[in-house]
Image: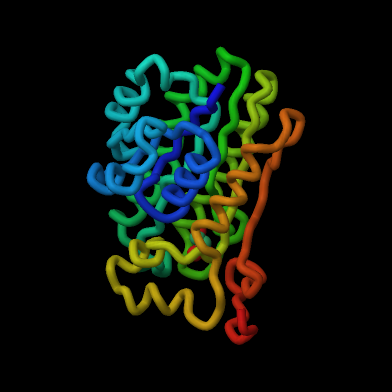
Length: 251
Ligand code: 8X3
């Protein structure tokens, strides 16, 4: 039977690339995002292998409503990819904005929980499933000015480990994929449209592409039943850790 995956944040970046690679490899995919036109546009070619759902992961009621009223033939979700997440601002703690902090905690942490809460009971009932939490190197290390973003991704790391412990008895796989620098709209959002500052993050070396992470997610969800990639950090070759990037290696 064709497996069903659900991807949050599927309108761009890692979420879009992941949903597309899964569709190309025969999965049916529920693509979730805030921008209806983008979802329709990006996935048009995949016809009824795609179910677009429009919601903001911050909206607890809407998440529960949309995921609680799936059509019968879309209910048995095998793979949940908790990808939606953003950085807002990069500022020292004394200068951070409350709105930015709210956004990061509401999307990256609470949103991930709202979606998981709606999907996990079905997996428990079926005693099978696979949850992929897209974390970050920022969930493993704290870097200057990263404060609350790093805290939100450390929370994802803890939730990932907690899910794996609690869902172990049901045979549900839980995996964290933790990217370093990936060139997507991530920095544009972080720097609020300051495109020059965003572009400078990826200058002088070859950052990861969304497709690099999507391929690793595809690999992770296609391992045999007894294999779980529990926690994987993926960096561009030029990046040594959260703060050290060698810019003149030539790749
Ligand atoms: C994205 C990677 O290094 O900008 O989560 O925090 S980093």
